[in-house]
Amino acid sequence: MTRHIMVLLHPQREESAVAAVSVFKALLDDGITPVVLDDEIVGIRARQAAALGTETIAEADILDHCVIIDASELGEWKNACELVIVLGGDGTILRAAERFHGSGVPLMGVNLGHVGFLAESEREDLAEAVHRASQRDYLVEERLALDVSVWHEGENIFNAWALNEATVEKTSKSRMVDVVLGVDARPVSSFGCDGVILATPTGSTAYSFSAGGPIVWPEVEALILVPISAHALFAEPLVVNPNSRLGVEISPTNPDFSAVLWCDGRRALELPSGARVEATRSKSPIRLARLHTGPFTDRLVAKFRLPVSGWRGPIKEA
Figure 1 (tube, rainbow, N blue to C red):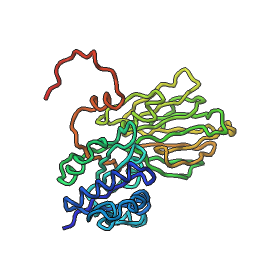
Figure 2: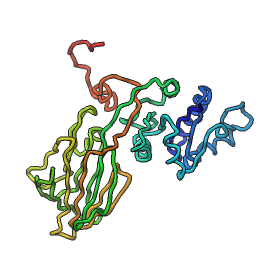
Figure 3: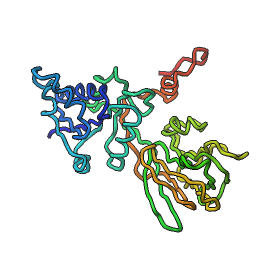
């Protein structure tokens, strides 16, 4: 039976095109057929012209050996692919998570960006990552995600999903936004602010971290609420039960304040006055393919380049 692995990449980045060609070659050498979206291979097609005359299964004809699909065909190919290799930074991985959430197909991220907290490998380890993907030599880790809904005048007007966070923010035409926060249908506090972040442990190292929220280890099941620049005495980040329902209501008393909902910084909805945003644990977690089983502490130190030279603790256990 033919094995298929999907490769997702940033269509406009040169380094993504270069990495994708290497991945295609390695997968084909291992007898696996790469699957790629037609709208993501612009850079690869551009490189083909410069590679004419090279050997078989080189850049000049590499795409002839891949399955190229249209975005409308993605649904039927989700079940046919055993893994998704994502080439890019966290933004590209979040886009892949959006496309594949609910499918159960694991994502293996290779960082071609800067921090790349969601990625499992760096660009210099690309060959090893593809080889281990071919050998099915990886573990699968489930990450908690959010189901997000918007209610207005008793009606559900919008539903979305997020892996990192859902954020209610003031718009550019508003100086601030008045909100009322709630947990499990009970009010907590109200104040004016620049916004509120509803985050997962995975998202605790992203926007939530920048706004002063706590870093929560991925294996901890919890939801996080972080006010942004709140005008209040009590506006501390909250870490609550993973089965709680977080709520942010846009106060209807000041219609001049306007707000927008962002999910993972990708999907936006302008919120009417009086709207309520709710976030709960999603029934569809994201599955990440893990190559390294080391502690999250080491990843945190490496990604943020934290100073640990003075550590005098015990030698790390094997």
